[in-house]
Length: 162
Image 1 (cartoon, rainbow, N blue to C red):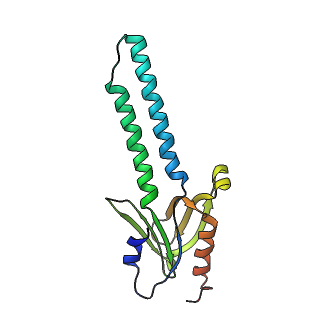
Image 2: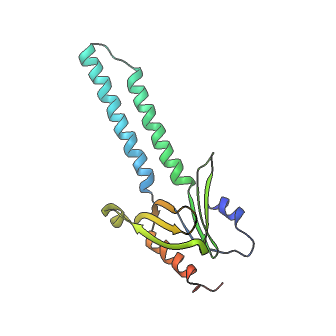
Image 3: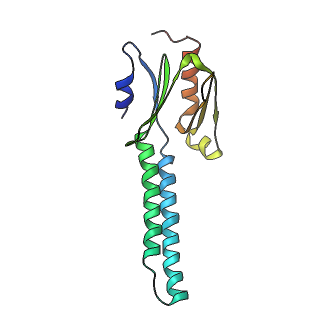
């Protein structure tokens, strides 16, 4: 699963923590699929009721939109990698078009977690890493975000001896 990051980590740079996105990210795609599927069914029934004949392309278009949204969420969930080493933080996302955010631990000046009520109950949240002189990093839907932040703080304060 973490093969992409493993290829670019420098020799002598050990992986401290690996985390991933929470499964709720894939569930949101399924929710969109259900919503568009319901809209497709409603559009089919409405066309038949008001026009007296079905319009088959509209429900299929709505259903195809739901399937595309579902697949985007699932691919995002399956292809994301979040890795912390003693020198850098990596966030890789994407399957065909890979986007890699990489930040040096030295550039991190603070970090915090934002959680909704559902996120608190299920154990996921948004991790925001404040960086000096470069753009900040925000990772939504991180599994066990407080544990990830704790590892970042340990590495930043050099309490981890490797």
